[in-house]
Amino acid sequence: MTSANWYEVLDEIINRGHLAAGGDLGRIVRHALATHVGVDGLLYVSDLPQRHLHPLDVDGVPRPAPLAIDDTLAGRSFQRVEVLRDRDPETGTPVLWVPVLNGTHRMGSLRVVPPEGADPDDATLRQHCWTVGGLLGHLIVAKLAQSDALHRARRPRPLTVSAELLWQLLPPQTFATPDMTVSAVVEYYDEAGGDGFDYSADGSHGHVAVFDATGHDLQAGLVCSLAMAATRNARRRNETLAGIARRADAVLRENAAETRFATAVLATVDFETGVLSYLNAGHPPPVLLRNGRIHKFLDEGRRMPLGLQHLDDADPTIPAREHLRPGDRILLYTDGVTEARNDRDEHFGVDRLVDIVERESSAGLPPPETLRRVVHAILHHQRGELQDDATLLLFEWPTPQHPKLLPSEALRPADD
Image (spheres, rainbow, N blue to C red):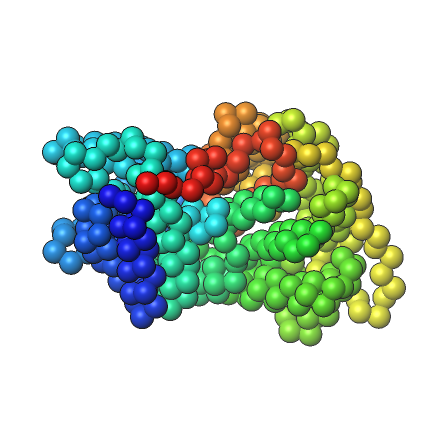
């Protein structure tokens, strides 16, 4: 297998992908790998709760059972974003599990069986497989909006209309540049959907936001969607934080019922100085984590929830400011996280939340895996049944010493 052969793999996937439906991706990658490099490949996608990896259909191949992310080597590859070696339980044949990424957002895993005689530990083979996994992650996201087959594969159970609406508006759950990393998870109560998150990064500034609309019905999803759209619209007009919040006030007061509103945290970070500016619209205070431990609560910059501020009132709100250090993390969350109750009526609480985040972070796990495990701990606290939507967002102003979202080997070019 030469780099020219692997180029043909990429060439076929890209060019067949132009006219492919989302449900065709499994067949396309399998054919390209088998034809040009003699590799057997099977594409799996993660479900929305990130509990199982689900195989996409391939002609002539019985569909395998989903794989548990917590209990399999395929799942460990997904968790740690690493190429890992396995063995087929029936034949003993070496198998590679390759993360499938859209940028740094984990979309699934690619099962690769190298041809007979190939060394599964060969660095060049692994780097080529890594590149294919990256291409597939981008293609999955590109096809997702037009593919019901991909959506069905990612849902362990049907969504409500409210959750359907919000999942179409949310950005990818993980995002990274050299100046910021963001990872978020959402778990919807009874699949209803009234929580949301947002972020952006351009030039010298980054933005993050978390929203929690009142109620557990379709109206909650509509209010959250309006708040997200209004703040995005104002942000893209270069409004200040106060102006962004006022725009959301106006949109919600004009289009939502009088009893409906959304709490939110809106924040901006200056990449050059590390200054974080934030507004808290009736939301639980974010937590600043420094050196892996809680440093302080960010409990200033308070104003009314979005939609409750009267438009003819003077707005005295001044954003609060916090000077970040390289490696600092900001944890934002909705009250469905901390107010989760077990059968003894005990809240999950901020202390328990921070303790789990600290423990998982100290284990060197990537931020998205840290949050995935936190959400599962919240569900375990409530015996798998939420009483409210639960959303977490972890923002980091990064440093080279902190765990990366990608292994260093992924950034090296593959050679013959």
